[in-house]
Image 1 (cartoon, rainbow, N blue to C red):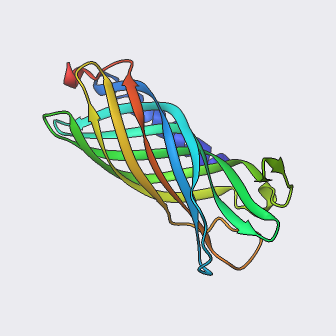
Image 2: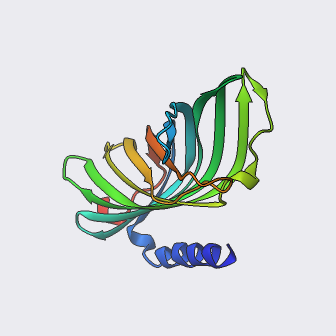
Image 3: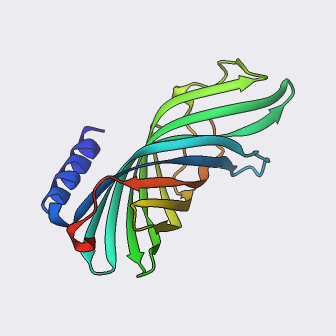
Length: 197
């Protein structure tokens, strides 16, 4: 964990060297998530949210790298004998997006995402069950995302992406569980890279 944190701190400091080409912003939005279960059992979708900060670094006229630090409320819904469970998984995600920017404000994006599990809550009819805890899930999740965004001249933009899990997060059984999250939301650039001014 310390090595990973050191790596990302070094990465962000390195981006500082490109400060004249870097803009900073805030983002937030809606999650629609579920877990893919290798045993084929049906896992329902769960609504959540995401919120965080971003840096937008121009590396070429139409290319940028966008690292983010985002809290993301994920999980799934599933049904067993005592009713429908709402399993909430909280993550601190660090996506790094490579973006191709069109001249009309649209951008295509893709890149890896590293997630750190922060909380686990399992509820039935709004009441906590205590069936699952953070000990039942792996502390780190790795996923990949693809998406489309648009930024207006005012700095306000909209972003949509799909994050598909690449790593098994299950730490309590033999079934493989992988995160699957669709995100849509807004972002606002507090500062704009000199390359775009």
